[in-house]
Amino acid sequence: MVNKDEIRKEIVERSKEVFTLYGYKKTNLDDIAVSIGKKKSSLYYYFESKEDIFRALIDYESKILLKELTEKIKNELSPIDQIKVYIIYRYKKLSEIIKQYNVMQNDFLNYIQLVYRVREKYDQLEINLLDSILADGIDKSIFSCENTMLTAKAIHIALKGIQMPFITSPVPSDMDRQLNEVINVIFYGIVKKI
Image (cartoon, rainbow, N blue to C red; front, side):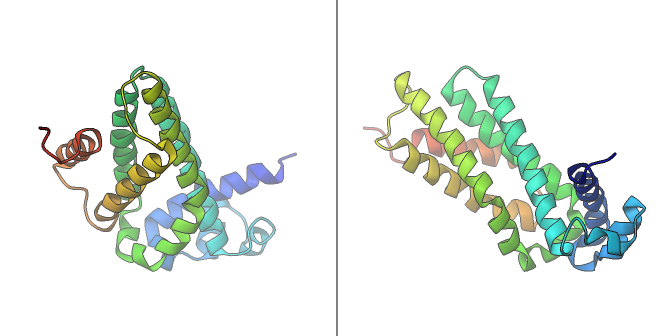
């Protein structure tokens, strides 16, 4: 017998295809139901609304991103390389997700608050990941910061700030150059050393 969690996961995975095809605004529960071969009324057993399914999809995508980020970072020995990989991989993955949901770019600002509310717990988990990298870097006499958690939050806020252009417009052709500049600012700042 198939359990409820497996069916919820199937609905979420299939809804991704439908949201990708039509965008959030134009997608309806009938479209999602058809994609999984069920009636719309049966979806209500698993989800309350289209927004509830979309929330679950954001949660699903966020879990995958965090898992992949964590795995990529584990492969790096140096805390410097871990932060570089974190930044570069995060944006490359973000650009992939944006390409998948290209039809949704135009109306993204209409549901950005929903995305941010769902992502809050993952934002904190990413901050914790950065905090542990910074603490490791301090232990290895590589980094110097008084408060690793505050520094991790500052880095995360800066990265979230520069991700908006990636979300609301096509991914820039010089993304790698832009990301390397961000990495340089994080590591070396902008003040000339005397």
